[in-house]
Amino acid sequence: MSSSKGGLDVRARIVRAAIELLASGGRSAVTTRAVSASAGVQPPTIYRHFGDMQGLLDEAARETLAGHMREQATRALTNDPVEDLRRGWDLHVAFNLAHPDAFALKYSAPSGAASARVIHESVEVLKSLVLRIAEAGRLRVDVARATDLVYAAGTGVTLTLITTPPAERDPRLSDTMREAILSAITVPANGESTNGSPGAAPGADRVAVHAVALRALLSEALDVLSPSERQLLSDWLDRLATARSHA
Figure 1 (cartoon, rainbow, N blue to C red):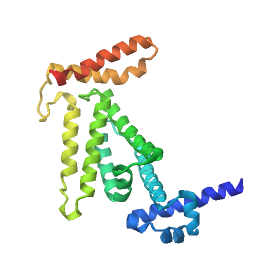
Figure 2 (figure 1 turned 90 degrees about the horizontal axis):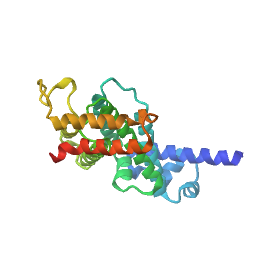
Figure 3 (figure 1 turned 45 degrees about the vertical axis):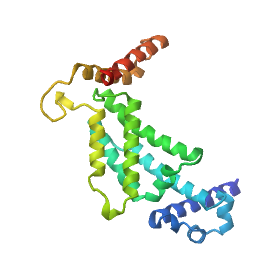
Figure 4 (figure 1 turned 90 degrees about the vertical axis):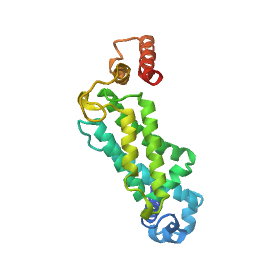
């Protein structure tokens, strides 16, 4: 029992050392010698736990991103779900820019079930933010499509910024993309038009927004409809939610 626990402690020390080296010096800093010295282990111990240094790099990147996602999942939210998504975008981009090697390892060439799990957890956190917008009656498209759009745009912006020398980066790129996506998937609050002046959305848009909202809230009425009735209503709501794009 004690030897098993000791093995876990050694593994955790190695991963922690690799995470710190990756954050401070990038991928090239995570060497066998540096990790061994920082973790207080012999080089063969690293290979026994991770196979090779690439395996350790992958684990360090996964843990770096997983820690960030845990913080995002427990972040305090406000009464404005759109603003919460906006802030979540900013925090996510800023974190990845601060940890470019971890981002590149997991998003440029994701490998293995553990990597896929971290990415899935990231998408689930994003989906929960988008779902709140739908429940508030402010989402133009269905939750799945909106989540995919935000995720793809955010990942693309981050990768573009990371691969651009800092002195050449467009400081407004992330903000511009963020607002374009938010404009495409959300409707303004309080009946305002997209330019901030009073105005009514087209009929198809209003129907779509309410259909998306009701679709998002169906899980709260599980005891009202039978499974077949819920499925039928879901199909109708999906059609109404996408009607504006075919109008």
